[in-house]
Image (cartoon, rainbow, N blue to C red; front, side, top):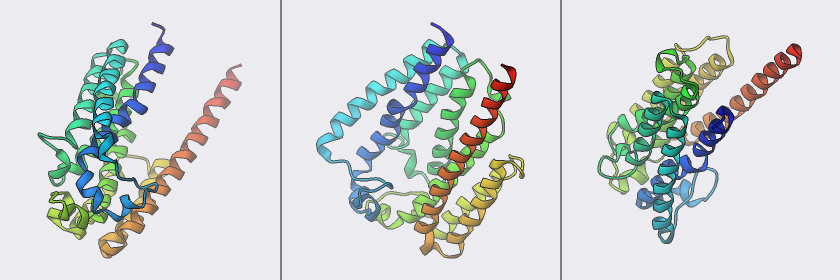
Length: 254
């Protein structure tokens, strides 16, 4: 199979199929806490509640999606790529579902979220046979920032998670400690990238946002919204800058 076709296959596997595993499984096993969560009841950009009628269908889709992701990895054929896909699929399931349900192990819940994002990024990086030893620092930055955003999200959902009997990082450590952990993730992430790069600007501004709920935990939801929208804006900006740069190089070569 041509390399371009393999790349298209793996990119497709990491779109809807991966989302079915990571988000679909989570929506099934988080049903009880979602019922108590005002954010989920709003049925907006921050999530919704999955009707139990669809739980079986979603889990079935997640099983098939797992097979699709691993098949795409096997077609790619690179050992580290295959291993990364296997770990990613396993984490996607075990983050939310029994027997491990990592999202109820304080700190591990946030770290596993960061690892899921790192693996998804690394799969693209390792597609051509490159190893984890060659991975640029921005991959670790994304992982750390994701862990921080997850911890901040847990701060928002403390009451709903506690009512559902879930032991998240914020339920066990408290809102302020979880918020401090989130901010520290961004601080550590700032040491992995050039301060003058677009990633450095993102992380430094992110630290300022993350500090707010450390001082006033009641502002966690506002801070969460701010960091999510800021992240999306910066990602779009980076894609634009990178796309323009690559287009210029292609035109120059022609």
